[in-house]
Structures are given as C-alpha cells and as structure tokens.
Length: 122
Image (cartoon, rainbow, N blue to C red; front, top):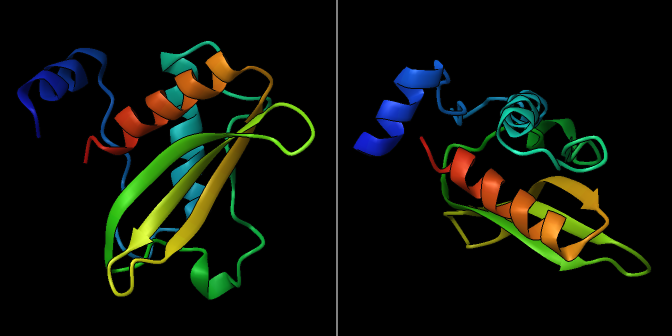
C-alpha cells in the first residue's frame, strides 16, 4: 500500500474496501457509499446502487479481474451517470457492478474520481 494512503488510513481509522473474491457487490457498494459520504459532499442521489439485476451467481466479486473502471457519462434524457465496472481477466469483458445518477457534470466527475481513489486503495 502506498505510504501516503497508509498514513491517511491510520489517521482516520478507515480501511480499504474489501475486494475479496466471492464478496457480494451489495456489501462492497454499501462500504463504498459510507466512505463517499465521509469524503465528498455530493455522492449522488442515494449513493451508488449495486447491480441487483444480475443473476445471483454474478452478484459477487469474481476470482479473476484486471481493473476497476469508474467513469461518468451523460444520461440519455437528463443528468449524468457514474458507472463502476470490473474488467474481467479472462476475456476483457466489462461487468457493471454499480451506478449512480447525479445532476451536474461536476458532481459526476467528482464522484467518479472519489470512487476511483477509494476503490484503488487495495
């Protein structure tokens, strides 16, 4: 773990988000939402929602993934969406694990950056 992150973790008593294989997306997203509320004022309408529409077997952290991608996109009719995707190691497929809707580009950019920073502390 980076020394700067380690110092901050000791100072505020916050541990990195657990990304262990088999961990339910629901639990990961709940932990992320708690961290986001502590770090930024604008964390989406209700924070991130996990990908509950996936089959139950796919609602958990896989064993083999390469990256976590957090990015903002303009909504189809209004607002902006922030996506969190896993890039799977076996075939470079993306698997969406969470999304959040916000109303300004600045809020979307800030939320995507904060989520990226938090999720890459493992």
